Length: 363
Ligand SMILES: *Cc1c(COP(=O)(O)O)cnc(C)c1O
Image (cartoon, rainbow, N blue to C red; front, side):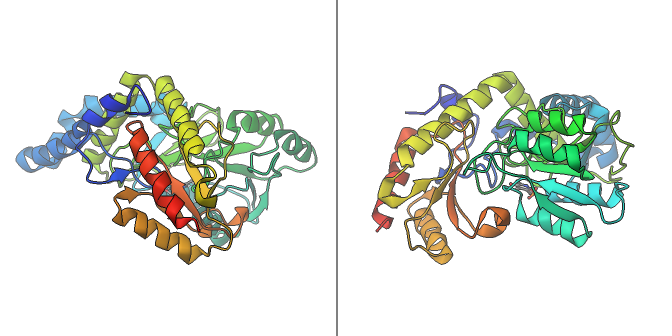
């Protein structure tokens, strides 16, 4: 039995997996139509010439850009494409006219490699206070802090790489804008997963995770009315990949994005309810956190290498999840976690199989 009414539709739109794929947070499974959009274009490039083929697809490319822009709350002309989310952040930081010795405030779920990008450029990082032990930003405390001091920008992972916690980005944007501070949102784990129209000034993300588009396509959107334009468009582009992403976004739009978000939130809750406390593994989000990214802390006494071993053992039994080491969210602590990220076609039996596998590992 699928956990969602959308499960069967999502499943039949894709090739039959050879594994219980519970790893959308690493890379989702692309639909046949998205793969066809990519391969179809590669064939046309070889047949007619790549530039001719791209011209012929101009309308589809415009449509893809328009749909993605609508999904993330930006205008189509504000979008540019790069090969990854990280490349988008680099392009932004390299082209943005920040002062020397700039400062950024981040949340406790900040993605480790993003911190490296800040550090490399001498941008001083400060962590915003959390409202609870889960690491949600304390918006009231932030509002107070902003009265006394304004960083050059806020940077928020709407969802991080090692926690399913959803940051209250719309509220953060509201208090930041009140203080005249711009907000940059890393939506690599959020786009296609939870609502991403937040009013943020700059957002970036990737095609391959919850949108289940191709690898190798990242996007960046810079609000043109809020900031001096940051010019990061690349002269060369993975056109086939853009078409594949456009198809993936069109499928989400066709189902109804709010319905996708609602069902993924429900799947997250079902997954947490099923797994919490099994064999002393502990769910680290609130059970009803509205995301399908679920993290489990290992039983007491486990080392990072034990979690990595557990991930390999699960894969050998046919279950794909991630061993999330602490580099993914270094401000949140040292612990390694098991990250489970089912998409719309997850079945109860797959969660049962995972539960019984980790139960026997839980001694
Ligand atoms: C995956 C991820 C990234 C990096 O995305 P790439 O496309 O691999 O560069 C950035 N931030 C978060 C929160 C992620 O989960």
